[in-house]
Structures are given as structure tokens and as C-alpha cells.
Length: 230
Image (cartoon, rainbow, N blue to C red; front, side, top):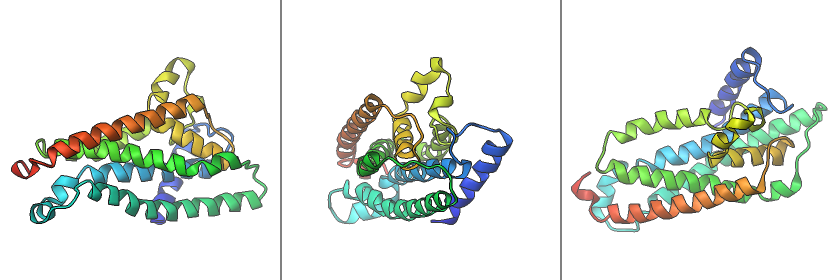
């Protein structure tokens, strides 16, 4: 829970911060990369684990009936525990840097909105995950592409670079990613730097609702016949 995000942050700091010299919106490189790593890890973990719902629980589903959607939802809560542990480590480093005199300006209003940001992360992970899970009942090899696809998606999300560093003509591409406003708002809330736009956040929230609704519809339809294909 602690070593993985810590080593990932150190690796990003050395490679992207020191060697590639990517900008970090004036924030300490370590805090910048850790904030992105912690947030992205929760989303990625929710997506990858929920995407295997039918395949991993086929035996259980075949023995007893219960609302199948309870399994991917339970994954969100179990991953939330991991996120809170890693988030606690992030706050400890924020306090450490603040005590050393690093100019960090948290925004208390946005901090109060953190539960909404967490809901958006969980919803996006759940929505995409159950859609992919439904497809894997017929296309089994699809699950092998999920983790690789999530890694590629990370580079299209401001985890290792700030959204402000993207040229203006390509801003629409990065903002089309619903995770972009979430990560930027998270950094703005706790570190005082980042590109926050209410319209972009509303877009992400609406995108999350649509994905969850579509995913739930597909999931509920597939669960009725999935034992014939799994």
C-alpha cells in the first residue's frame, strides 16, 4: 500500500522531473507526482478489478443468487481503504514540506469538496469497469488489454505533467479525458496549483453519470445469460 506509490513517485521524480525536466506548476516535484499517482492508482485499480467481475466470480455467481452489481461496488469500497492509506501518506509529505517552508497553499473550499472528487473517480472506474466486464463474457481476451490500456491512458492524463503545459490547440484533447479535471482539482485543493474549471468538472461529473448508467444497463442485461458464455 505504501511502498508502491512511494517508489512510483520517486521514479517519476527522477525520470520526468530531473531527466526530462517536465514542468510541475511550480510545485515540488515529489508532491506533484505523488498527488497524481495516488489519485490515478485509485481510478486504475477500480477499473481493472471491476473489469474482471464476471470472469473472477463465475463459480460464485453460478451457485447462489444475489445482486451481481454488489461485487463491483464492493471493490470500490475495498479500494477506498487502500486509497485512504496512500492519501494519508501524501498528507504526511505535504505537512513535511510545509514545515520546511515550501510555499503550499491548500484551498479549504475545494478540500471540502474532496468527497465529490472521490465519487467521480469511483464512478468512472465503476462505469468503465462493468462495461468491460460485460464484454469479457463474450470476448475473453479483452481483459488482457485492460491493464495495458489503463497504462496508456495515464499518459493522456495530467499525472506526470500539468494540464497547463499542454499547447492551447491541444487543450481540448486533454480536457476530453474525464479524469483530467479531477486530478487538476485534487492538486489545486491540497497543493494550491492546478487548472480548475467548473465547466470541466461538470463535464466530468456528467460523463461519470452517463458511463455508470450505460454500464449498469449493459451489466444487468449480461448477468441474465452470462453463465452460458463464461
